[in-house]
Image (cartoon, rainbow, N blue to C red; front, side, top):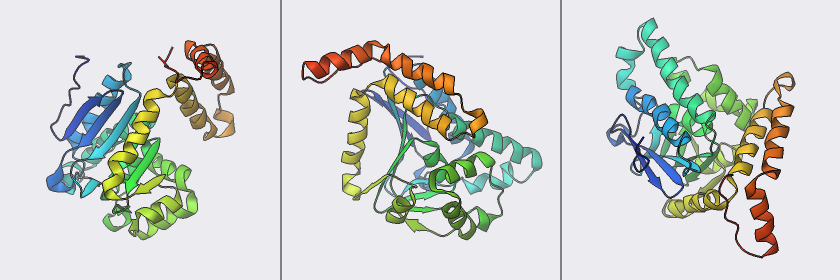
Length: 269
């Protein structure tokens, strides 16, 4: 890979590296950034590039324009790609690979939401570690109005995030909620005025650029283990990750910086 440029397989997904943040932007504004098959397929490709790039400490997903983060799946493709049984199976595999690629990505991920966040857009957002949104954002899951089956992994992510009661409420009714209700449910973490979204995002890109990446990565894995059923919890792996932090050069740098009353410079080693 040319480490100075990220190569997206489709123009409908753009990728840009800004310091230690990889920005992945869904660029289908004519359809309010609805996800077409080529857009789903681009996600694992770009994440594979980012996984091998030591410069990347955060991946941010956003939508082009001011009207939508992602307005669901591109339903214009449904007749061609979801009508037949084989096509449904293929579509589900492609979407699942993209969402689980985000969910399992080793580095922190953030959904920066403005406008409509619908169906598949919510799935992308809840696959991320962090979610922020502008106050003019709107959220809903229209599957029950379309007769769609919903995959286990997407519903599990939703239940893990907001609980079974709230998940049933949103899913059964397909009702629209605003950003404040989304925040109260735990669907997103923070809300701001539309013109303050860039500044709010900057808080996160700055924090992830300077904080210890090994500590952040270990916490991400341990939190993921906490959410697993008790028999599947890997306590030894968690302990190894924690020991690795204490044995790292970054920990030594953090101690020195604290004693010297200066900002630490972490390298991820």
